[in-house]
Image 1: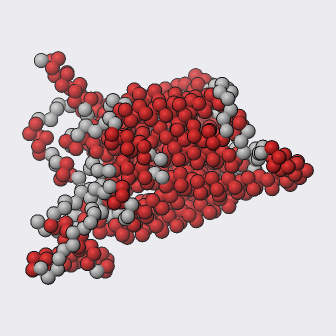
Image 2: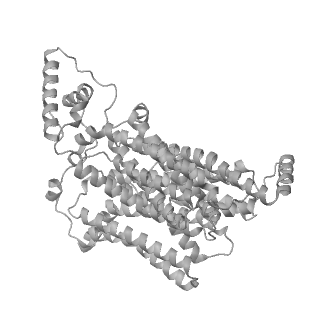
Image 3: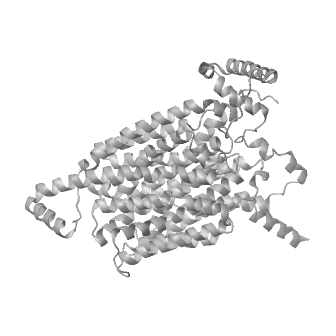
Length: 597
């Protein structure tokens, strides 16, 4: 009997939604290898003799790989989720493994377009990790999607700092070994976890202790970020010996593993719930506000939004409720008498389940997309060019800024998920207001980078990291609320296209062109005759010598342009807030319009 009890508890452990969530956190910590591009790009640039424009092309290929998740979304609907993870791990291993072979001279040098394809394939593996983790956990935690998405995306943002710290422990004099670690490390972790991360009917596992479990996870996240920040600063300021760095890395790995105590305690230490207690818990249909039932009252609600005067939204809650109830009554009477024919909608209404094609004809979907393009695209440009930005301002150790922006990115995602959830749960206000605030913060961060004041790199990295990270906690949760969970994978992967689109414009066209222009001006001032002969030889043989720019001028204009784009993104987000206020009041509001049945 004792053995049967243990078997039962082991069974509940492997189907516990918290185990899936913790495993997804570990999986996501490997889904942030794209954030290491700032550390990898100088190695590729020096080894293959690329200029900044060519490095920017590789950066765009990386961003495309990180964001084009159509294949991942499609395969996740066809294949078992473990198989999709295996495909992602293979792509990651083959893409970055080949890049490592080329950079170290173990494989023949490839043309730039082939290197772009390899970077794309390697980074595209992340989309499988992202899609599987988010789809599994949003289905397992339908009532807590803000915190869940924030924490998962946060660990993806922290991946760069974790891998950098592990690399510091190995510390090979050959910097290309970082590329080897990027190729092998994530693949090993994903293969170890691929049978654990999947939907397990989590909406039937609601417990009174869930709030405490989330608080514990948040505490671990904050401790992890503070610890990493302290270790990174210590390593930057003091020349530590190998033993101390190894001890720091072991403590880091222990902190990452600590959340496993939640599913272990729920499965083995706490008494299992009695069956009758399970039935008293709210069912998924009661706890989940995302789907508005398609009944007769819903048709009236749809008609109501079309017919309702705009000034009704501006009235106090009690008065608004009264006016809406009167309007509903009139519409029902008119429909019953045949005086008005209530038009049946051609597609779903906001809050119901949309397909991607249905979402693409909605203005709200494109407001989210373009706001994300301007906000996160400008942030990604900073992440991709952080190595060159810090070098131009005279900093030798670029790794410290790459690690710091990774940590601030992490905290931005955790905070964005938490505070946006407070906004919708406590105030029934659109989640997009949190994104608008994040975009204002980023505008200030870009301004600091433009000014190049002493310490501006640290402040700018803080503000851009927090603002950029918040986008990726807020957008997936908001999209799932407005457009449903049924096709969430496809919707999410389409919205992520905003990232490479923004990076293509900001990094591939604006930042790299301005950087190379300033570098050419500086080279011409210092060695005018070399510049002339260099341009002749590059024209004859197609050889571009690597150019280096120094001073705040290198990214001054780029940063001001991106600051302006963040202000435009803020305006778009506020338009979305105005348009979706009634939807969030209906989904979450205690004083929303009464539902007629």
